Amino acid sequence: MKTKLFSILISLSLIPAMSFAQVTLNAESGNRAIEVGNCWQFAGQTYTSTSSEVLSGSFSLISGQMNSFSLTNSFIKTPWMKVGSGNITFIAKIGNQPNTVSRGVRVSYIPYNASSPGNGFEGTMTTFYTRDFNVSDLNTVTVIAPIPTAIANSTTLYKIMVSFVGQGGSGKIMSDNYIFPGTYWSNPSNSCQPLPVVVITDTDGDGVPDAQDEYPTDPYRAYNSYFPGQTSFGTLAFEDNWPIKGDYDFNDVVIAYNIKTVTNAANQVVDLVTSFRLLASGATYNNGFGFQLDGIPSNKVSKVTGNKPGSLAMASNGVEAGQSFANIIVFSSFFGEMIRPGVGIGVNTDKAGPYITPTNMQVTVNFINNGVLPPGGAVTLSQLNFSNLNFYIFANGDRGAEIHLPDRMPTERVNPSLFGTGDDTSNPGAGRTYKTSNNMPWAINIVQGFSHTVERAAINEAYNYFVNWASSGGTQYADWFLNLPGYRNAELIY
Amino acid sequence: MIKRVFKYLLLITVVLTAISCVRLDPPDREPKQNKQLEETTVPNDFNWSTSKKVELTITGLPTVVEIKSTLKITLTDGTTLYSALHNMSDNLKINLTVPSEAAAIVLNYGDTKQNLPIVNNKAEFSFIPVVQDEEV
Image (cartoon, rainbow over all chains, first blue to last red; front, top):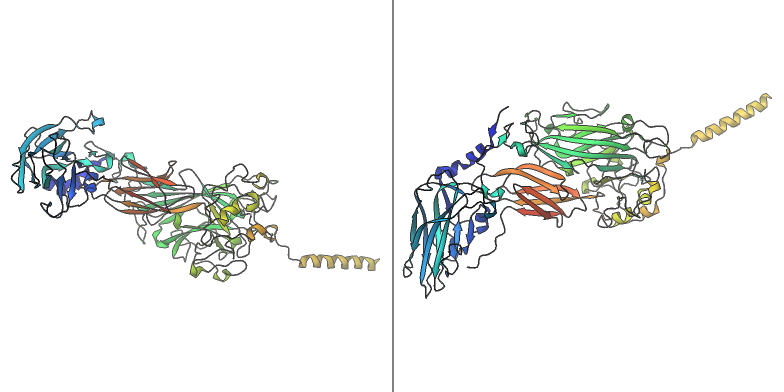
């Protein structure tokens, strides 16, 4: 077991900063929020691009009016840093306004204090440099503040605060080109607390600390993403008589699904773990079930395990042969996986028949096999999400009789001559598939899960607000499938 | 007697032949009138799913040093939808599918945890903080 230091990652990232060993501020981002995001703090200071106020480049810092000698009225404060040695330098200029009495600058250091979280871990401030400007000198001056030996090259973390003070008149102070010898040591992702200075364990050395790694001892895996959730299942419900309308009981094939996407530290998909629960089939047809990974070429899959494609031809990597996009045949025979009890038409749609325990299947699509990429290369998490999963059944062993969710594209194995026949009004070329003339589907997807209907009970008879949901395009009664008072007719639910 | 038997046999044969010529659709294939559904007008673009797609846009912060941490996107009930290592400086677009009733998703990164409302199937987050203009 090897232990690596997560801080190595940070150290490598710091090399450019360390080579310069200085923390700088020149306002050239033009957006003070970027510096605030990087843990700089400002009070009574903003950026200016007004040409008469800019001292260098396109932007400079400008104070408010000076009416106080408080160090906290107008200041800039660095992020946490490991202070180096030498001089802190910047340029400054007093604005040309009448009645100016005094203007000055103070430079202070603030040590890190682990016992004062309520004060941003800031310890007691010590002012080590004071300069009062000649108010009649309106030229740009260079301020040079030597770093005190007490903090120079210390391993302790400090912030440096530059305060602007003064009284009288409305003259502001412009400043720019701040250079603070030392190394930036703040973490913008962690409330600007110091970067890790302690050893963070990364047992498998994949760059993801154990505390964040869901596979801390597996260098090839790091994260899990889920749909619809870690333990929850969605439900697919099909009619199998396409292209002829069925009886709309949507129980010819009913399958619950859960999808887990496993990724590595590079956010490449390692495994797609698909869990299916065969709930019911109120059909005489013996249907098959599969899914296409839309847009994912077949050669990007290393292997498929746990599926039962029967006699259908599979490629050597387990996807269906002859398909451009990866197709995974989960099973080719529903009743091969779930035996019909002989009462009623199929399985679990007739209350007079025995309840058959659903069959669970877990099919894993492996993309990166022990760190080895497939011939087609890696698939990233951004390229593969739930919307790529294009589920379908194929009716009664006829591989070409594919039935998908509405407006999902068929695979290359579909029998295209079926489109536009019977009650189907598909026009795949125009993106329209698996709909009747009034846009009724042959399949629905209830991601929250769903109790299917008994045999021959149309879904709108069992669920009172199904039609409201459909006719409103999903905006009304989006919870039509819930078991709420008045929502459904229990005798029609299996 | 033989004549009578022959008559019966003939009758049975005719009846059996007649029955065998009738195409009996399997029970689940018989067309069943469903006037309500057949008269329902459904919007052409309805996807018949109780989910919706959300495009999450993340704006990165140009950082002084490389900051990488776990970016986790969840539903408000804590259900993890997306989990990956993310460089805080990078811009990112994530396509998510969420239950149609979800009004927000939650972004977790470092010690940042923020509810992001879903508006018109989009959600946004920026690592660049909102800074109020200073009175100067």
